[in-house]
Length: 132
Picture 1: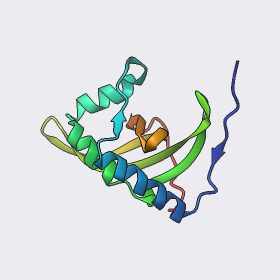
Picture 2: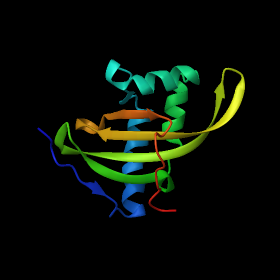
Picture 3: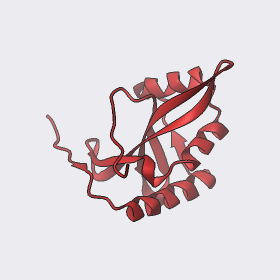
Picture 4: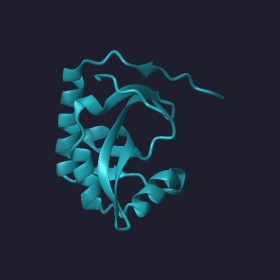
């Protein structure tokens, strides 16, 4: 059984700035997690490849800006929830080699503004930023 999900690009820059204020406040308060379960193997491999500590992951999330926003979409696992998609380039250390790496970040905002980073890895396809 397939659930229809919609993709949304009708956001204003101000709306995404407000969303990111909540994300950053939650991340700073320790109310966030980057998923690294078996289901999120790409995240786990990416975090290992670049030696991303919890603190580095937090710093990366704090650097997100409205111009990094791509789109939002309904969560097919929870139709009441919206996922927000970002893509940002970071300078990362790959075992002693500094690289500029594009990172695909998919965020879900849960109850009490708890932030779940569902995707945190290199993009698998080209992704267009909404405000550029």
